[in-house]
Length: 69
Image 1 (tube, rainbow, N blue to C red):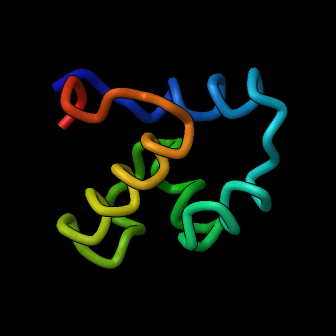
Image 2 (image 1 turned 180 degrees about the vertical axis):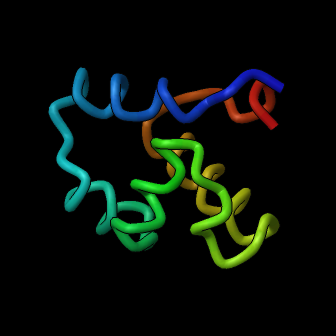
């Protein structure tokens, strides 16, 4: 699928949401959100968990995860 990572910080910035706020909203640690934003999946605790974080993050930002995974 398309690489989602670079889109995430752009959308987050456009919403005026800090990574700290996103951490609270998604209950995913900032370091994992940062890993998603930079497509560094090796930093996540596993692909299944990473996809869960990605889904939560995308849903929080109103993105359609079906197009992405």
